[in-house]
Length: 238
Image 1 (tube, rainbow, N blue to C red):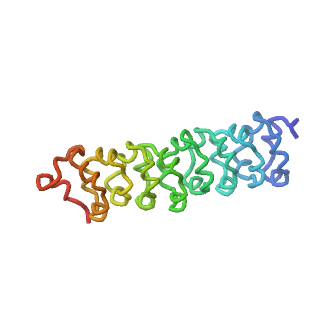
Image 2 (cartoon, rainbow, N blue to C red; image 1 turned 30 degrees about the vertical axis):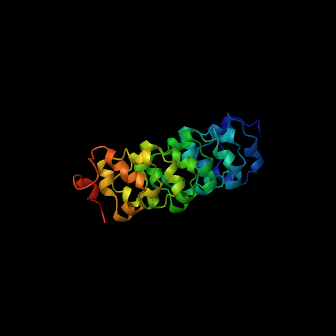
Image 3 (cartoon, helix red, strand yellow; image 1 turned 45 degrees about the horizontal axis):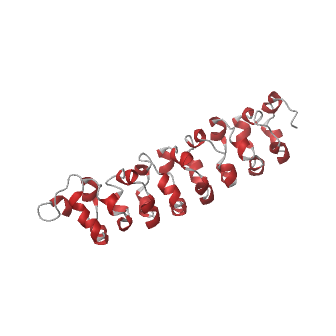
């Protein structure tokens, strides 16, 4: 099987592929893997794709990665996910993103997670959001954070909110802020929130603010002292 030429491997039909045992994929070299056609990749079973190790997976072209079905992608073990290149993660589709399991998401490192496109980030399900670890929350970039749906933002746990980088938290939009668990925002981060964030706070969020955060409003960009002289602080969304 290893003696197959790259031309022979590329010439295998999808019909023939279904009868090939997983052992064939297990011994494909890093030179042979990249010649598999997108049609072949789309036709492989979960067990056939699962026979590839992280090194083999890492040699996929972006076109090959894009051809992986959601079912096959979800079946990859965490070590295989570790083999995905940033070039793969940068082109992950919304359907593929939704197919990732909690364990697979948790296996992504900062480089892999940081290049995921905003469309794919916005496709995260509520279940996936609940399964995100604090590490993954901390990986969210200033481009990715604003792409989170308001439903997703509302499900972020205290630990996840605390893990957000200050720049990413500040990048959230005024539409997202009312859904955020503000009780988990640190005083240092709260102090750099902009006027648009403060004005977007709901009355419920105001009620949950820590005393230190209320005091920090005095130093928020664009805001004057808390009180009657600072109408921006009391102009909140119900």
